[in-house]
Structure formats: C-alpha cells, structure tokens
Image (cartoon, rainbow, N blue to C red; front, side):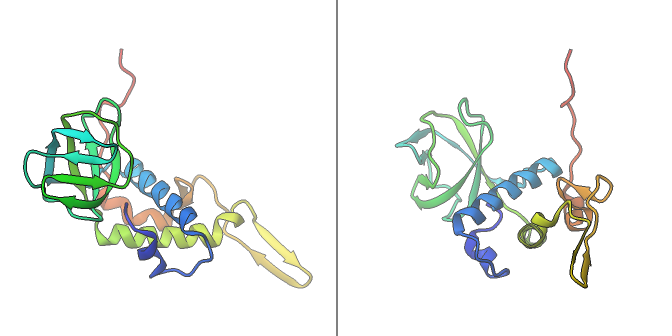
Length: 184
C-alpha cells in the first residue's frame, strides 16, 4: 500500500472511518499504477515462493529480504494476476501476508516501493477527494447574499477524475505502453 491509514492521518484530519480511508487508498494505488503503467517494483528484492500455504503464508527455500509492512506484488500466478499484498510478519523462510492467497507454487514475489513524492501526492489527492469530490459538477452556489463559484471540471482540466494540477507529480513515473493493442 502506498500509505497506511495511520500515515495518512499524520497529514490530514478527517472523521472518515479507517475502513473507508483504506479502501480509498487502495483505489488510489491502483489508479496510480494504471495511469503511470509503472508497478514501482524493486527487482533487487525478488524471490520465488516454493509454496503458498495455509491461505496467507508464502514459503521460500531461504530467508527473504522482506519485512513487516512491505508491499509485495505476486506475479506468474495461475490464480492471482498481479496481486498486491502487505507483509504481516516474516519468520525465517516464511512470509505471512494480511490478504488471503490461493495455494500454489512457483509464484514470483517482488517488493513494491513508492517514492516519497508519490506518497505526498497521494496525501494531496486524498485531501482533494475528501474536501472537493462532492462539489464536482457544481459550477456555483448562492445562498442569500453569499455566492461561491467552483472550478468547472472538464475533460481538459481533469485526469482520471482528479484535477490535472494534482496529478502532475506522476509525470516522471509514467512509462510507455507497448503491446496492449488489438491482436490479430
């Protein structure tokens, strides 16, 4: 996960429940990965799991370079296409994750790490989400003698449902897409 709810609460004050914030953070993570076509993998921290056991344990042939709180991406799985999981704890050559997994062997596990500017960009997106999402589509509001005009959200000044100005931090991380077209 890009940020935990506890980390997010260090930067913003909200009455939103932790479950709601966690779901929004997970959605933002998937949005950023899709928009940038970047999986933010640290390939130096990669291992092949010899087995997935007991629903949430990854077993390896040797100790692994993962620690509690790390985000891992599981690839080359028959059942979990590019699944993201969070490490709960590590014990020798076993890694317990918070999510449920499907029993199989030979999956590739790679650490995912997001740069600090991406994390802070997510904080800004969450602030905007919590403060302004409900105002999208309202151009102006007048109550008695008080009038407020909002920025009009159009296709020209938004990207992926967010203002272009807030998405600019992702530009250095965008990667070109190849081979995703229609095959004949």
